[in-house]
Length: 225
Image 1 (tube, one colour):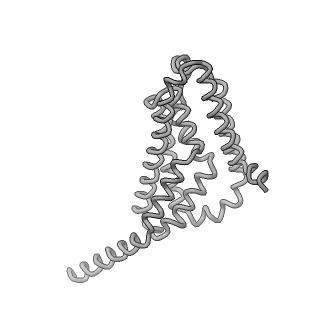
Image 2: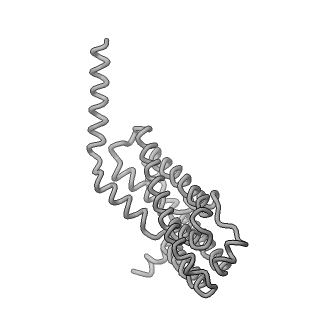
């Protein structure tokens, strides 16, 4: 019995190592790093919060984004095959909903385009729930999760623990990226202490979010044809 158990354990260990070995770690890491650090709703919003309120007060938003991203990645990991079949039917309304939500965030930033110092004292930064909600309004995040788990991490499909671990790693990557963008925003806080510069910075963030909203809605693709 002991010998049989040992053989079974050795076989399972060999299969697990084989599955992990099939993952192109370098290619997957590069894909995750490049996509996480590019401008998007999460990063732009965190940069804006860092510039207006500082990194510490932007942390609840960043934590909300990270938790929401983890839940979304876990959902994509567990039911990637089902979601992949359903996505073509729901992608259009999701694009519209995501574009509307990002546009609303841009308008909020534009309405609060006062000087950084004044805004820090009077306005409240975006919180945990807003960061969490944003993840489920972003069709690109869902497509990102599907891509990661169906293309790059396909060898670990069906292994619940590995899928949870992978989702956690992706959430940590999202936390790192949004933190860096927020710290980057905070670094220009002193420079944007005057109303004129603060207004220019707010307009820059609004323009970036507006571009993101157009991209989410699919209008940019139509215009480029």
